[in-house]
Image 1 (cartoon, rainbow, N blue to C red):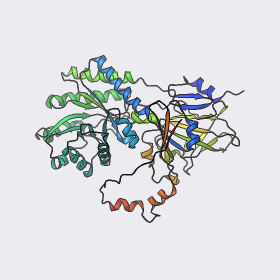
Image 2: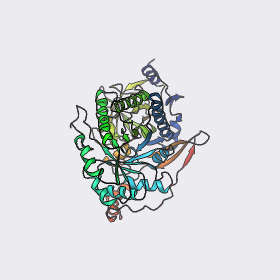
Image 3: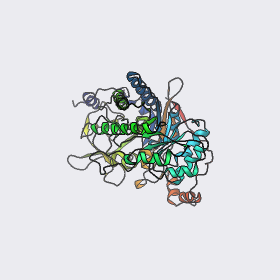
Image 4: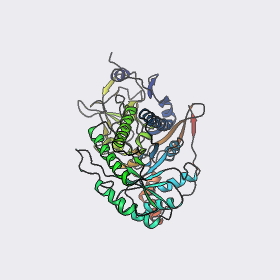
Length: 495
């Protein structure tokens, strides 16, 4: 008898894991019975398991706390959430339960900050680290927050940005950061990042624009590289270069006492891959402290802005296999009732791999397959995994059985990149979105965040309704009016 799919997984990985298990040939995700959710809500389906967000925040705080204790590090640690990873209210409100702070990248983040403040989720003491290249509306909104007493730290991204605050800020003190432009990886298309201020200009900007102004203080230097935190010669070289610059600046700028080492703490993209987060953080703290001691400079307070690490592993997308197509002697296609291009854009745009597992039929034999999406684009497919060039799925009988599959750790960036609730390739609708949580007794609960997108919303956006979406934007004259408060009905079910 041919071995079953569960045999394949158990021979390839250490399975089950803390996160994935199989009961009665059906997959559990963080002990959530996915088939029960499918039976209630159908597919395609996006889910977010909210407790995972807090778990990751608390783990990161523990890693830094352990590293500080191990190395007798005298600075403090502040966890910020990078909002561009996922702007959803349920993500921000869940993260803010764990005393985190916020990093923004757009003018349109600021109305969200104000709404969170109105709801009592943030206070004026909450750090708002304002990153990104800032157009006039962004600097205006930040200046207004500063004038109202919010704890905003604009991270200067170019030499002219500070002029906006000179003109608009009336507060007694403005605490600034500077993002330093790092060198890109050797195989990247450019040598130096387009983001931030080049090393050569940092001291001059401070001397000419910040030091002479009694209201301005340089409090933070910002470091980030696109690869994220990796144990590579490139990462350590750039971090070392950054820290030597920090030490140089701290000697001429006593108010400088903090660094932001960005985000990029990796998440699991395979059952096989594993990360020793504690060792990563230990090495970062050890390097920072060694360089500061070498230069006789006090160690800085450390900020991070973890985005994908915060929310990525909470997300999953579930599909049904709706057809099997044998296109030649070797290539068997399992067609899903969704689209990779529109719903998991990183999977085709960046060749990003996710943990992909069947939801049911784990006791069935398996075969090599390709997964195909619904759009007419040739790139709408998924056919390999992080650990293997091949993809295997259970064999099932279309006439008598259904087959469901899940992509896991998809909670960061996919909705915003795919245009959540907007117009997507071939007018593929945004799927139903369900939030999974635990009540006070530890029982799993689900609530519908959004139903599957309907044709009326698409017609409105495309201008086929009497009140087209685009006219509403134009009539605002570029201003964000306070939206009417809407009572949102969430359907809750206990499992």
